[in-house]
Image 1: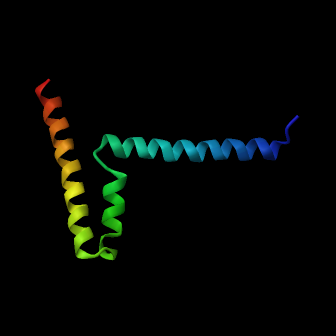
Image 2 (image 1 turned 180 degrees about the horizontal axis):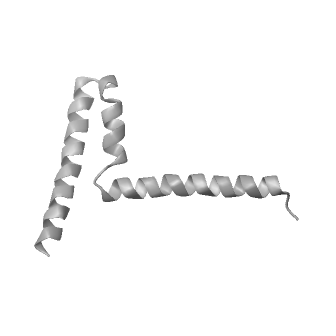
Length: 75
């Protein structure tokens, strides 16, 4: 039989993983993106060329999201 402490650690680990997964799912549903968040947090560390590339990537993802929202409203 497994000791109580080991079972407790496994349950707590599973709960932590579930919280991270649910947070990621909620961010995706509400339009958040991990890519955009990371780029926003580290924007000042990049040179001008990389900043332009990051801006293009974020705008492209935003356009896709706006298209999805428009398609959902049409239904």
